Length: 624
Image (cartoon, rainbow, N blue to C red):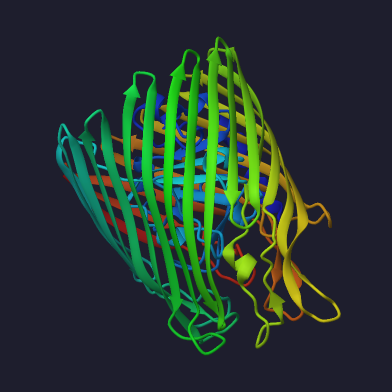
């Protein structure tokens, strides 16, 4: 496919952005330099973190009027969001060219990646229950452990912030007979607060495959509960999110065969944070994550396929301030149970992970250093150590240059280690319990500058080398296969981000250019774009808001699995425009509108799977 139209769009928007004024926030300083927890595990201003960081606020999420977390991530350059069809269909994200299971997803500090695929079901997390999303690109295994090779996506759910009662109710309707109903209620007093959100989503969807004629329906009921209470010298907090629903998939390349599945996703955290002394704060958190998915009928075999992850954890963190040093010391314990049945092949395994971590954040004059390390003891491969160091230098009070080096890892999933297909429909494939972790080394340089009170700009240059990638290897004589640590990848790239907030206008643009290659074959990694750009602009008209979003993505290599034998294909670049608006009808009542894929482009993120054409949605919201 010809990519010249994309190239023209990419560079035209990048050049035009210099002369454009607009964005999404009221308070310029807070919006341009928010506080983030994910990068260092402690509250830190974005401007003081060398890593590339994006924060999506509650205000942005409300105006976006999207259905799930994946729609918010699409607006961040350097993140390839891959959808195999419409609402509720599986979603994968590739951060900075790394694999889809190289991104750690957290909800309120709880790991959400399951133990079968190694990824999180972002398509089942709606936006109404979310306060903000923190995105940190680059390795963060020292802070959070396995999977944080490409980056971390941290979803923070809503809590009551306003004194007394507060909340809102929302109703949305749009194309594909899609409905979304939600309600949030919160109460805050001097000693603490409590809030709850309940959301119901339903859609007829559309046929995921090109040429298919049957819609793939989806429904989801999600609830969240958050509470906090001052207790002694500290504070007790509790958060939980629970999603229960069902969806439909089509058998690969099928036109009429529908496969229905049920799912339950849940995550909970109970924590206590207190000040032991003026210089020592401690946090103890009990965590639990569950992820269950079951097909309603067998695909291959005699019983329906199912995947179950149950993970219980304990996290202890201590922050000690000693002069110019802020020390973070802690330990983590997790007990993970995996049960799965795939075409009558069974997995029933338990894995224990233990870790200790340490971090020292030092600020002295114009110099800053963040040094961190983590030792992980894993049931399968034993001990593994990661480390990182970042150095920053304030060239002026408003301009900071940084350089950093860090290592990260991904532990093999239970399915990679223990799921075998010795006979039947599949070629013989045997598990490999002796797999090593996948390992990465990342080198990065950054420059962040505040041009004035209304503008910021940031640049990052990075190289990430990943080895011992797990892949399936087949014997050409016997045809039998197994998972082995054989592949290596090298990813280099440059990112740029510009934000401007000026009166009623706001504007943001970020772009990414990268090369993600298999070092053995020198071929590009599948489904990763070599260039991407995202721009958002908006304006307030008194209580009313109007916004426009652009997403431009370059061409990507893929495999056409519908052909036999499978053939490599190239997916063309595309540009998507989304129009957003919100009008205040009454002091507490607003009417919102969203028109996505405004130019009705026909595009694919996975070979053979269709994406939505132009689609409109209306949102009625009452706040109290």
